[in-house]
Length: 280
Image: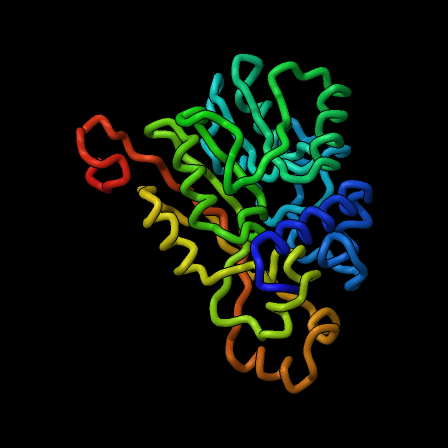
């Protein structure tokens, strides 16, 4: 895979276009969503017990349950970044009620069409899906009370730009709850360069400390890791990318891949200082 942001985006679009036309079972039996890496469900969480869950919108692609931690209230405007077939958006809609609004943003046309079809079947009038790039979100500033995202920021090449856009679209005192994949230690080069693993949210991961640092740099406050769990990649999957010697080295170095759900707030600028300063 070329080290080019546009190449990464095109690869992700291609993979997730394939995923949009697969069933949840097909996606879960591929560690990377679109491919044939083995019969494992490595990252996905069980949504079936949540109000608003719709099986047609669940492609088995998430790595957390951000809506469960997002403190969504009745009447809120919620933006779901990387909304896919609408799974998190429909759960969020149950929490906002009919008086609220949910907007899903996805860069893959096939996903947008699938989500819109699911919305029509459900008869929702306050849920909408828009084609757009998370590095340039097609919404006005200070639009959202809450932003959620599920295992998607990982796929964005310029994470600082993406989080600056999240800051922009949030209202002052608005907040986000985002589930994503982070690292402790360094990934082997063979995995970093593998497009399939990138589309599976692994090789696009950055270190947890770097991830949280980006949030602070963009001006977010009250940054809190709400949930964290280790993701175990089976040896059978690693062996498709690494030699046995590399696998042994990988294990010995204590490399860790984790799913985290992180919360943060946009501060209130009314105190008169720079809106990105922590004094606000």
